[in-house]
Length: 377
Image 1 (cartoon, one colour):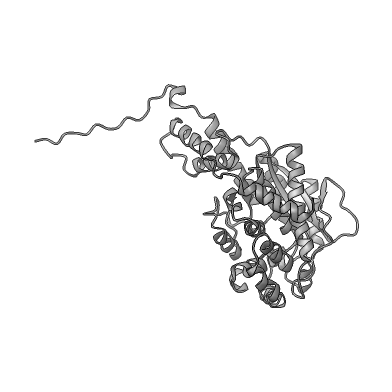
Image 2 (tube, rainbow, N blue to C red):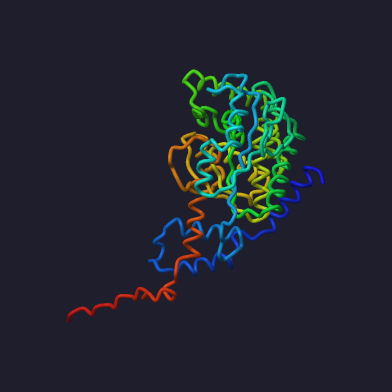
């Protein structure tokens, strides 16, 4: 099966699924009403349990295996001075992930989440030691300020490789929820360019401060994205006229990153297997936006974890119509760090649903309606 066939087959599986699964959702709502608490007193945690049940099609969702995928890749656009850090940091941070020293490792360890790290296209000549999954897509993308990031065929392969990586991991040990994380110097530039192109927004309204650039670098970043949109305008205009999934592949080829493509595939693979997808920051949200262009059913499987200070993050979540993020902690780290915190809340929501006693089990009296007091005549 070639890459395009894998994507097409995955889309068919997604579109055949009933989401939310009504029977499971109704069962959770019914149980929530019987638990030893006032109605709706656990607020959004109740809604989370209902959402997860509706996606997974089980009345008692349990998050036995929680996973965050961190896809890393380099971007040719770093040649334009759009980042505060050199490209070598991508490789160095991946080593840090593998050694357990990054923020995502601390959060994942605390919440018992497995972290899977993927080399989606790091610009290195020799492999990095450690349990690193190789996507074999190349050593970084081309400079989008000078032309397309990659070929259409390579963009197709990136999405298909993400699907395959998810399926292989899920086959070995089924995951119950997955968070999307990333690492790649220059990838906020790529994400902002994609959001600008797909949403037809001015780069100045989308671009944020990324990894902590100074005002001069910020202006340069906006100018570089404007240049990238101009250089690739024919491909972008053509992409708007193409049907899915070619639309998403065309945008990815013009402006994307290998890690964004792989995360797009991870999201598609997860949805096809009824696994809830937790969105992290602006880059992973952009990957989900592309996946939703592949099939508009995809957004039904997603949970926005937090709101980043990056302006493009709110824009892309609005384009997805995914609802309000669970948290606003002013986080802008990436790595899946916000997704990890949200996954822990999802776990708590499922535990409350399954482990709390009902009124009958606890022999607690239910609330009785207050009798109407007759007016004195």
